[in-house]
Image (cartoon, rainbow, N blue to C red; front, side, top):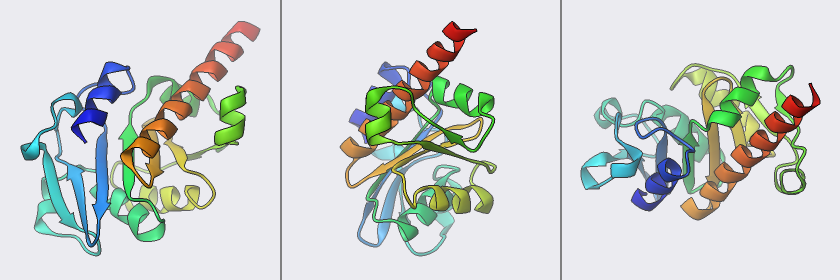
Length: 179
């Protein structure tokens, strides 16, 4: 988790204190603590919560713990990265529909399109929208908030995160050049 937190910050995919990372191991979830700087994750920055129910530890875990839990309960994912990628957030705000269609060849191949879901931080509405978005996709954008990517491993979730941001960056620059 620490390695991916460092990469997210180093490559400008998040500001240090925004975003979260989790992995599912059996009947538990390891998730970054609320307020944890992603480029400084250590053992104190990770909380273990149950997979199948809320617990007292949810109060100190990421504010998105309920969303991560719902995704794990309804998909085959074992890793989730939520990042506040700037171009992805921007494109979600500019989008006129609930879908972004990538223009770049890799985005077309690997993402096809990118669902935009709505809902407040850590809400049931966001959890339900995310689960629905992950029916046919491995990456989504929360409107005005950031990306959520999943995978069997953190490596896979990181690759999806970078592809989401790359496709949104290309689309932003393309649309800007056309004006």
